[in-house]
Length: 212
Image 1 (cartoon, helix red, strand yellow):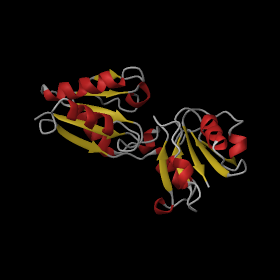
Image 2: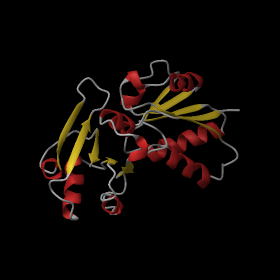
Image 3: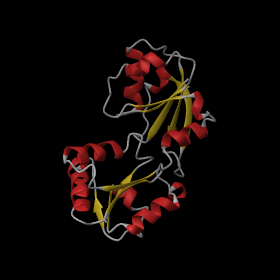
């Protein structure tokens, strides 16, 4: 029976790609992922590039191909279960009525939030994890900021926009934050700052923010 693999590839560097992820790519007839993700897997048999404009189309294609008998591996940055492709793929499978007809295997990966927590020496069970992807104006983060625990968050667009959103909703401008940028890459950078300073600074889109 063909299988749909969903493989977490880690934060970006090949040092954080797991052997299980490589095994799933080697087992699949076709591997789908972003250009950056595909570059980590020269062992892929056949590749299909994915970009931000055709994610839905390519994920639907992956499900259809597996249903038709082709094994496919979809690459997900970080971990598929946190702001990754697991949720949309499960939704597509349900919408197509294929819940019991698709063999699905999820291979976890090292999330950038996990690496951020490690860099900041924050125990997992002493922090709140959030993603702003697709929920740019969510007030949920405001409700949890004063519970005495650090919040580790994935910004949706930019750290500048996220910081400004928090300021606009009454968070102290001097609130301590850390920005972990391009985690796992040679030019990785960790910056300790304040919310006000971050709202006036530019970082790449590959960032995680810690709000203390």
